[in-house]
Amino acid sequence: MNLSLLCSKLILHKKSFLQLVALKLFESYNKFILKKTFRPEYEILIDYYLSKEENKNLDHISIIEFGVASGKSLKYLEDLKIKFEKRYKVEIRLFGFDSFEGMPKTENIYDQPYDWNKGDYISDYHKVQSKVKSANLIKGDIKNTVNPDLFESYNISNILIILFDLDYFSSTINSFKIFENSFSSYMLPRVGLFFDNIHSSSEISGEYYSIQNFNNENIKNGKIISKDFYLEKFDNRYYQFLNLNHKLFSVNKKKKQIL
Ligand SMILES: C[S@@+](CC[C@H](N)C(=O)[O-])C[C@H]1O[C@@H](n2cnc3c(N)ncnc32)[C@H](O)[C@@H]1O
Image (cartoon, rainbow, N blue to C red; front, side):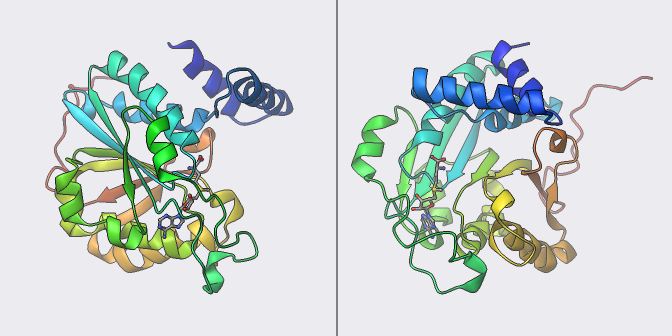
């Protein structure tokens, strides 16, 4: 097993006081010595999905990040890309969606306007572009950029992982357009999700509320954003998108199992 993955798991698993201390130490080491952000949750999620039998023979996958800001987390994903491409012999395509104008103005009470101001996390698209090596940046409001023509032109396919970091309820629910049937051909049947702001949201606001809203509308049609009951021991922000109508949903690629 890879050392950093092992450390990530040890640090996150059922956080005790000692694990919290280790997490802080690792965060500080990355921030002040390596001058990088540290997202062990991403590494665990990507490794878990790539290690699944059903994803073993894919020639490429796509990872989407909704909410890029200055590109710190996307840079971290680029490092993971290099590592996992080698380990799993798969091409990893990275796509970051952001307006690069910071948080939009909102009067939507479900957006938790008490937490964010218009323009928070504003960044410079060209600077971010020069910082990232291989990731594709898609600039614009999420309600316009999540569209099939754009996915086609950027060659986004085999989507396996989506990382949500748009903070607002309204922006997150707009990004859920990606779960509509018109995007089904770009997705793998089970997609790993991470919601960065679940911790600051609630049952009536923010990211958590957008998930509840989506499920209330879509479970009857065979689609759900479900908790990930395996990964939740590391962090309760892991979810998975399941679409019973996906044409590959029931295909079983596992080897024969014997007890
Ligand atoms: C918390 S920041 C992302 C931080 C980044 N993931 C990181 O960890 O370094 C949230 C980002 O969401 C973007 N955002 C919020 N709502 C948006 C929308 N409707 N369309 C496009 N971008 C949006 C903002 O521009 C901001 O850069």
